[in-house]
Length: 468
Ligand SMILES: [Zn+2]
Ligand SMILES: [Zn+2]
Ligand SMILES: [Zn+2]
Image (cartoon, rainbow, N blue to C red; front, side):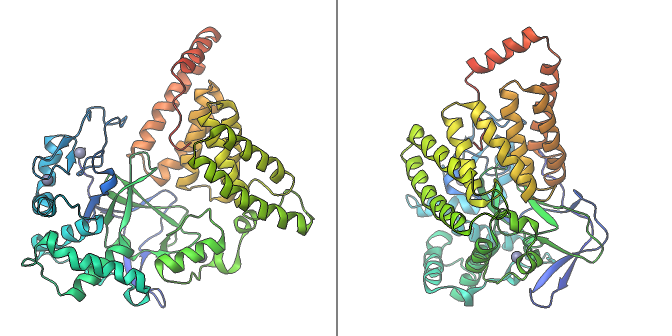
């Protein structure tokens, strides 16, 4: 896979009044339009995923659109880095060579992800010295003055041990400058998701994208395709409008978002949604009917919180039958009082999907998944990556249950969202096209063949969609 070229549809850097630098649209942008695509200045695979993905292109064995990646090659030097093939290994070598020596230097210890990241930035800087960069890493925010004593101590520790990894002779910076760099990584590194968009397997630093400010109802979304980070419009954007992304999960309540923004990103959100609320904000606390008694709502809220704790404990013990009873019992009580879009009920509905899938009660899992999807459709903007990915999973579940016509519809909806949030180059979109094709073929088969197909899917043990 060739790494895609960098791209910009005309983005300008501005100085905002109270949020530092920011990015604005240089021209009008349409929904789904690719606005910016950046290679990372530096990136690393998280240690926890180091053995299972290619450290150059992020592919992993079993990825449907990369059938040739069967087993990863191990770097003979550090025995830590892994690659799809010789080609990826060769391309990674310039960045990996000094790192390979450093990893060997601290063996049998293992450098933490941030240490490897800072190492990569410093080595890269040595190679790039002559290059004039539009946005310099050193100029990004570090929020050092706002750190708690504990956070500060944690950073200090990483700085002190950095020389063991990098060698003290080569260290170009004073301790203060090193601290600044570690703090920058802390606030600006972006998680890189696997090809399914589900879990974070690496982190990258993208200086230009780091200038994007937050809004709880953002006009853009940043998603990664392999190591590249791409920014797309979630709705039409006018020329000179500021481009914003959400740093936190849009599904969370105002209180939870603001708490996270303050403790992890060190600012109090002043966005329109936080100040003026909106329909989606009300829906997160919605009751099942109007004029619900205040004390019933209060009671069910506390009951839901208590049950969530208990259910999660049961889940840890993997006692699925008990978990199923607890989840369905809680839902039955919630159903009379709070709406499906209520965050407390949504958490339980999500657990219902999960546990019914574990118990292989696919029909029941689908029923709850459809309710979650309907709630997401009310809570999220029409074009949103979470909604697209969830619809994809519901569509897969419908297809596994041989409900091909409805599956075809759901997957079509998912594809139209995913093409706008991830782009048509993304493996998620390619996988969707394959599934839609399969659905169409199966729905044209005779009743007999459809029955056989259903039996075959059952015998194959119904592969569970990943998110369930
Ligand atoms: Zn690779
Ligand atoms: Zn190596
Ligand atoms: Zn906000």
